[in-house]
Length: 226
Image (cartoon, rainbow, N blue to C red; front, side, top):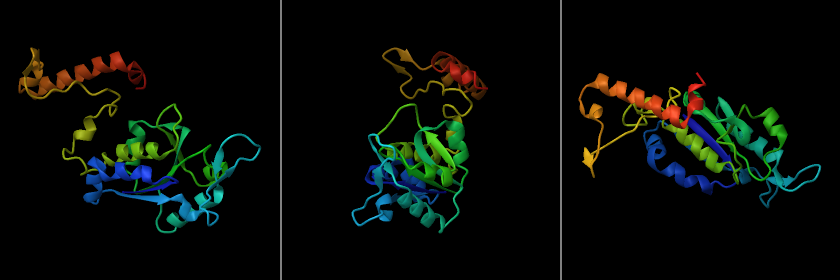
């Protein structure tokens, strides 16, 4: 899978792509992440990629021309399944969206900044708009990093345990059950007997029951989404 990210602050994305699971995915040649500085396609020698908004008002807007040129140049080299704009008014990211995107071959992520991007880019180039939550950030870079992480870990072969991602929270509209590791007894706080039983059926039943209990307690809205 290939992910191209268009940003005015590419430095913000360097570290998240060079560590942990995303680094492993790239080393295994299962994921390719390319970060592009939008100023490469600036409208003048000063690197301008934004301008004042028509109609007045505070805040700058990312211009049509640099974004259009960036997208068209990338699209001339390969076909993209999605061109995604990270924006607070997009569809809220959830596990189903991440699952679907992990099956794509190539996608572009556009990181917004300032007051956002010119509406004409959204109308004529963007195929999907995603928000990571109901709040406003300084730019789309951190949202892009979140999305890449959500997608990358789902690609087959990335995680050491092939089944691990299938049992994450939200995969079946349930939160993950409690987890424990050694020692069995810490300060008198003991690991549940079911997990020590060695009986896989008992263990799975316990985990499912605990997932239900945890979801009802913490996120009852998930149970109403079935």
